Figure 1: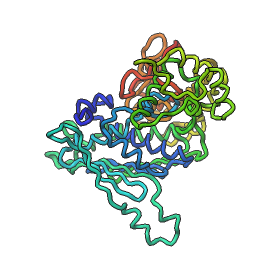
Figure 2: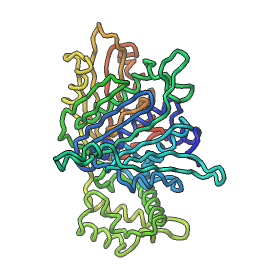
Figure 3: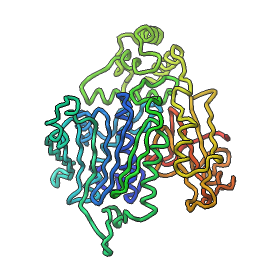
Figure 4: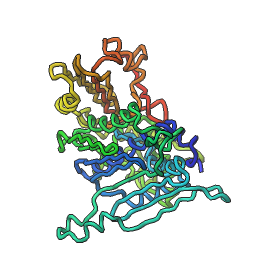
Length: 455
């Protein structure tokens, strides 16, 4: 039941209810991009906002039934993915479970989540059993209209409904002036210029950070499309192995603990050899055998790391050291470089004057790999726009600027730009993106990055 209250969802997402449309948008685009990348499909994502909801559609392989079933099981609070270290957009692994109850909290009478994938249409409504005070999830499944429309097509390939369509829906509403409003805290006026711009900025931010994606936004009938600049662009993808060099002992303990808990719930038990196979440079049987021999873990199950009510820290530390010794560190470029040409194309399309455009890139030399890229452009004296900042980490747009404190002074990005005479009223565009395998945030909403060092 914790998920079925405004207070708990604010805690889970890190954002107040007035920002939930932005949370929904960000998480759904995240999921869509990940789904496409896991099958090496150049993403095509359509976003639509209208009086009764928000829809995000992709061209990926379709949301797996098991994933949806797991999201609807509220007896399990967290995902074993939460402890995984990788340069992915997500980290918590719990986004869909958080989204499911939002419609009923927003609109208790009419709120629903509609998911179409693999030829099926799921209309999901959530509530609470008044007697047991447990979550009650209702999933009404029918054949998708997309399949019905294509059933008469002579081309066999065209008969398949490819992708996933997710819609969060509520009842239509108007304020006393007859303007359309959304049923978020105090009824959000969707035509408010500031909110509409924030919604668009998140969609545009994803287009800036993902050269391989074509993303369109239909905002109450007004459509904008950001076409991919390089459909073959490569980055570290969600299905790629993690690297042992991205972990310290405490991180590996958390991951092992999460896996053991997951195996217990599922009634299974994986071997240490299977666990090692998930790491970059150790997927081959030869390397795994060496790790197992040197760490003394042949034919040992992951659950055997549990001693009493604790994990055996010394044994796990030895495993980590052996894995790191036998696998090469990941070079920064393997994480993914967005590149100057893509940034140039996006900023010039915004109206930036070409002779003002500049680009900078920094790659790590020691320690954890990272790629830090920035781009700048001036919109000109005649521009009515004020400063626009697009900042994010690991190819995801941010609801709020995550670079709020950094360096020795801890002043943050906005203050740094102001010191460089690029204050909030200046007609400039500035982009900052960080690719990093172990991004850390100060809050659950992932709105502020923890960045050390004086540079």
